Each structure stands twice: as structure tokens, then as C-alpha cells.
Image (cartoon, rainbow, N blue to C red; front, side):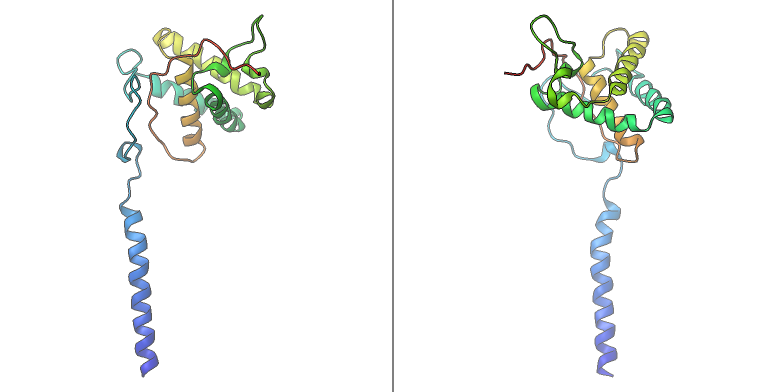
Amino acid sequence: MASASASSSLSTMSLLLLLAICIPSLCSPTRADEFDYPPLVNGLSFSFYKSKCPNLDSIVLGFLKKSFKNDIGLAAGLLRLHFHDCFVQGCDGSILLDGSASGPGEQQAPPNLTLRPAAFKAINDLRALLDKACGQVVSCADVVALAARDSVFLSGGPKYKVPLGRRDGLTFATAT
């Protein structure tokens, strides 16, 4: 009799513990606009291109959906490209700059030699599509950031907001 009572108490406590763990996760935000984001750096906003390129998000997402049908590995390539762009001088699009007479560009730096050429081509194609739709208002740095974000989402990851308004770098990191 005592073991039945102890077993029942243990089951009740287990159920309460399970509910205490599961209920908060069911109530947690699941959409990108419900998350608390840290304060934005001056000059960046979530609606930076709202008036100048209102279809920016749908253009990027549509382009990537079509591209991933042919090459899903491109998603990882775009995410890695964004990481390498942000790593040295910040997220300024300088990874896209070609070298000059003063030296090689970031693409020729040893850590970047294995970046996928298809990722660079996708950014250039997306850039041309956005220029045609909106004029030359969207920075390359923002194109790379948006492509990385949508690559994560289209690969089954979360959808999150990206603050926009980055300025493109005019110089690239050089090896010293």
C-alpha cells in the first residue's frame, strides 16, 4: 500500500516537473518579430529600405528559393561568405572587392580561398536583380547579410530580422 502511494506521488511530481519544463517553451516566441532584439547601432534599422526598395525581402527570398532548387549547398556557401565578410573589418561587403595594383583582395587571402565561387556569383546575380528593381540603393553588405539570413531560413533554421543600412567598405583587409 505504501509503495502505491509513493509511486503515485512520484508520478505526480514527474508530471509537474514535465509541465514546468514544457509550458514555458510552448509560450515562447516563435516568430522573428516577437523576439527581443538588442539595441541597434546608429544608422541601422529594420526598415531602412522600406520606401526605397519595398520588395527587398521578397526579391531576396524568391531568388534564393530558385537558386537552392539547383544547388542547396549554396545556402552554406552564402552563410560562410557572410561570416568571412564580417570576421576581419566588420560586415562591410569588402569580401566582394577584387584586388588592385596595391595588392590582392580579401578573396585571395588564405582563409578565403575555399569560399564557394557559386556564392560570389549568387551575390552578384542578386545584386543585379536588386539594382534593376530598386536602383543602386541596397548596399552589397546588406545583400550579403540578407542572403545569409534567408539561407538559414530556407535550410530549416529560424527566420530572424536583420538590421539594415550597412555601408559598403571601399577597401579590403590586407595581409600584413
